[in-house]
Image 1 (cartoon, helix red, strand yellow):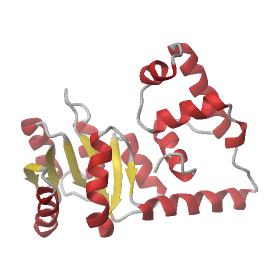
Image 2 (cartoon, rainbow, N blue to C red):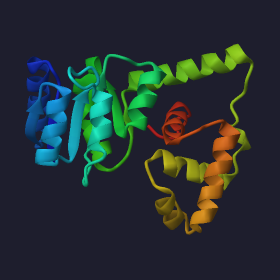
Image 3 (cartoon, rainbow, N blue to C red):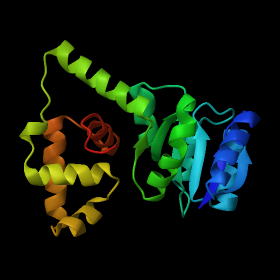
Image 4 (cartoon, helix red, strand yellow):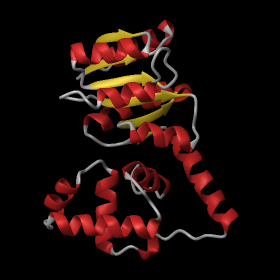
Length: 212
């Protein structure tokens, strides 16, 4: 597994490199700003890109989005000081697979790398806790109820697979369904849960404990 590190603090990069190399991973390059990170992604074609959200010259979310345009895009892990939903949604929409709080990096980094290598999402437990807490508070404030119970068994299966990062085509193959049938299930479950895109599907699944 080939990893590119992008953080503007050299001491942070050294710590991350040490942890990754002790686990047998290869750090192919390091970047100190966002533009350099994009250039090094194009040059080295890493399997995994670990990038700080607050990079100079180009922020980590934009780096993630540009990396996804490569012919072989890396799996992106975002490091952040922010646990609020707006940042997480933007990171997921840009193509990030994992979102870690910087103060929990040591215990979460390697599980995140393994998850992203398997094309699965990963979030710091602290991030998950914040998402669940915020969601429950919003439901109570607005007097709403969770609509998960309205989903059919098939819609729940489709929801989980989509949240795990599967495409509609992959879901169809795994469940032995036609593509149009999967698309219909997807549209129905999004309407029932008031979700609007894949990023929101992933966050909903995290809140519900459907994926961890």
